[in-house]
Length: 190
Image 1 (cartoon, rainbow, N blue to C red):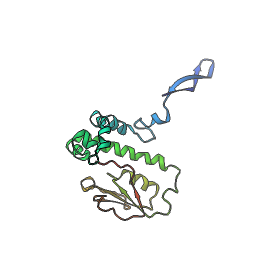
Image 2: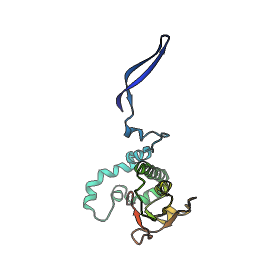
Image 3: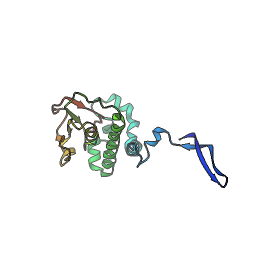
Image 4: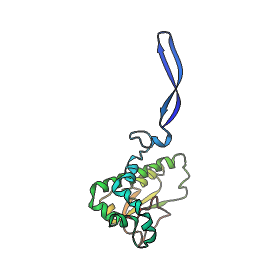
């Protein structure tokens, strides 16, 4: 929140008068937390980052620096994040909503940047989840062919009405489908 000057039109019996008053207004960053606005809503990402069960992991960063074999979540939760999420549907839903809301930021990132993917015919979105990022980019660049590549149990049954978007299951540490470019938006080792 910030204090800003707003113009108020006072319609009294004498006619309209304009006055300036100080009032509270949202900052550009805080507008990203409002659902239903024209901007993407980052509220699910904030909820994920402040969830007590998951955020406690960051209290274990010191241990993680000295442990070469386990992820931060394995140290804090006693199991890999994916395994934890698979056994906790509420957290899985929160995680998926957060990843999708983070992908919505692509709309702002691509706004007025039509040359971002110039010269490319295909992109593979590694760890692309439900395809939100690929769909957003595809709306702005319909000539591109997209492959959303994620773990098989993530993409199983996912389909797109867009002929330029397909879902492929696999392990990025074994191989990645061929494309002109690889998109790694956010790497979360889960």
